Image (tube, rainbow, N blue to C red; front, side, top):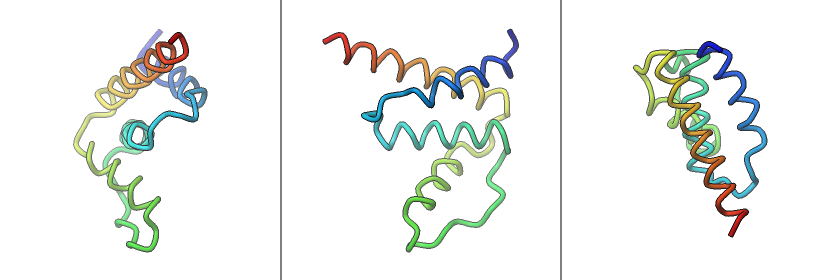
Length: 92
């Protein structure tokens, strides 16, 4: 399986992460996903009265400059890490 197929598979798996996944981790995934699928940030930063969208934009901006392939690889690694953490939490 190629990187694109793996990325799409892990994008689906990310939807099954537990509700307890921290917002910080969700934002990391969001930024990497946007970088992998869109590229560098192409919109202006949302205003301070829209903190949720602003946080998402900041997460995307934080990974600006990563190649599509690097962002996909980092995304897959992060989903695997979060799945392992969720499994370990469920086992204890």
